Amino acid sequence: MDINSLIAHYGYAALVVGSMAEGETITLLGGVAAHQGLLRFPLVVAAVALGGMIGDQVLYLLGLRFGSRLLGRFKKHRKKIHRAQRLIQNHPYLFVIGTRFMYGFRIIGPLLIGASRLPPKIFLPLNIVGALAWALIFTSIGYAGGEVIGPWLHSLDQHLKHWIWVILAVAIVVGIRLGFMYREKRREKRR
Image (cartoon, rainbow, N blue to C red):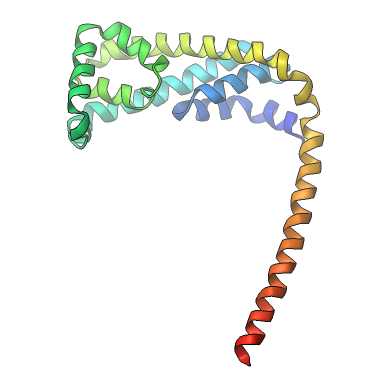
């Protein structure tokens, strides 16, 4: 099975799982795969939005349940945490949707939102809207980037096969060499 077949077969599931934690890179790659015709653009957006929404929902629930205990461990950042929680209370719509786009807030943002006790009936719809907007923007950027790296991707499968053989050959040579060195050291210890 070549890499294109793997992407076509498991791509959507990989996008859902990958976008649960770290989303931008996997989303951009999903856009590139859609550009190459391996995946369908609307389904990439849906898969990435679903994964991002599930990941943030889980983190929000963890923040809701364990937030004060978790945040209590960050004593050096107490002022920043209080400032973020004030922002959440004063501007929940902007913060929930915008946390996906703020560098460094992808994981901590939903935890902070949960710990601030923002009601689930407010968080869930905002989380869905934010996930859809985020997925559409980053998938579109990846799709546009597919134009640039598209020619290289077509030959990726062949390049991978060559590199695998080269790496395997080098590993065998190094393994044999290390085996001889190990054997020599054992002989010297016996003397």
